[in-house]
Image (cartoon, rainbow, N blue to C red; front, side, top):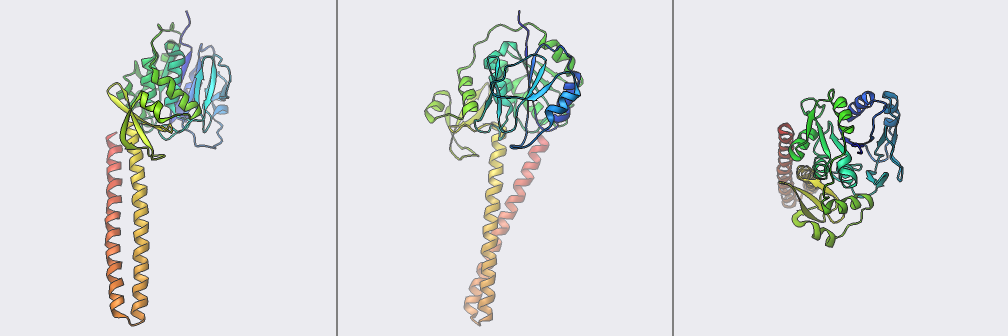
Length: 336
């Protein structure tokens, strides 16, 4: 019988050191292909492949489109591309960002689930916010085994915590205990075939090509009252167990918690623009007040002085709103 020969790993903040540790501890005969996504800035140049190759016995490289998977190798998602698999080949996706990232972790886990869920093990490591939790849930629905780093052990606990709450993983383990666990899991026989949710195939194609439509989205989800934080288009609500995820017809996708973060970011930007405009109006009114006063036009000067004060009062309201939103965001981070 085939073993679980696909090991998919997702990480973000703090993930550089976590991946280097795992690379150092992997055995040379690891009977699995390792696919890893770590959030990298677009157009960045990274030496992570060389660092991981030097750290341990398995060669690591940034994945190439159409590349055949081989066991005992590490494939990394390149900047600005989603890492997907299709059969025994790698597929690099150019679809929209998910959870404000490309590469994102969720598309990898979904593609692994659809391709070979019963042969797969999915892992979420340290990171901020919640990318990976939805994909890990999907992978588990497709028969994959799921592993999450213990949040108390992670450099950044938010991603592991979100994955535990959303995906109810099969194993929660410290980073030190993970190499032995993963080595044992990938040597286990593959599980029985499991029906694949039809929505996953569609979402993988969106991540690969960016092709989507409103009629397609109407078939797999229900329309939401919320607008997409990226393109401001219509969003749809997708049920995942007891939780909801959001996707627009352009392809941008968010888990509910990250949707809230994105909306807060847009709110802060809007408040910042409003404050800038009000400060400009107040400065202009103050200038016109001085000009009128110097010209001896007392009535006009009084009018501009009154307006300058009104604009400054309005600006103070916006300043207080910005301060309040920042306090709320800080409280939310502490709660997570």
